[in-house]
Length: 295
Image 1 (cartoon, rainbow, N blue to C red):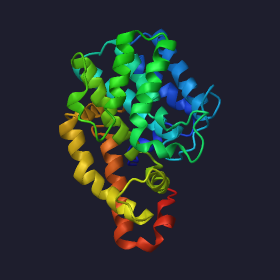
Image 2: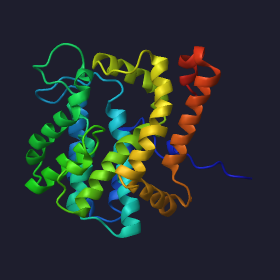
Image 3: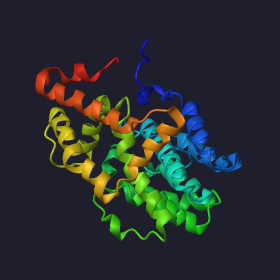
Image 4: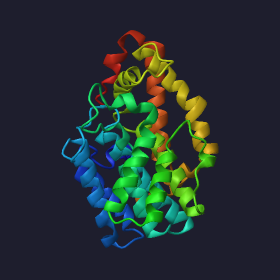
């Protein structure tokens, strides 16, 4: 009997935060002392508190696209990418990987409103959320006991997720730091676009763009059409050229840990986009129904 092909969405139950963090931990301890993961676990719990409205000085997350699920998707993708790099090239420094994991966990905190910021939702900070996230890490990192150079690394990594900033202007102090920054920049794209819930959540993204007055999207369906074009015209080139193809190290993780020869992230994204293009072409009037997939 032929086995069903391995699918990304079936590796970890993404509805259970503890299961996600456990998989991130397992990837970490392939190369590092488990005791070094305690600070990452603490950061993950703080992020949950922050997004649920239980972190002093901040309101609950009210952006349904940029939520805990998005953070979890990117975090797991980042941990797999680091593991793949370590398998292929040798382990990155443990302190830098810990800082990288914390940066990933906190990379979209800029969408969370402070108590003093009333009116609307965090979506109105879309164009400035990267800088807000950087500022959050600048305050949070020292409280976690991160050394100054590790706080700077985490902040620079978050800058790498910006689609408008010239990544060449980010002051990485060495090659390891640059690689980690490029990894987060890659996984912020790969993690969300490969997510099981990506297509249905695009309607939430449209609402966020509307509140932020992001130009170029006249309707939900217009966003769907441009999303398919977005990957072909921008994301693929950014991953392969601007971020120097570091995303390909994910494949090494899947080869070693799951005994498969393909990059499950690339496969998942291609499947998503093919499904989306089929909706656009064959069922434009039923796109909401079609986005609610059961398989």
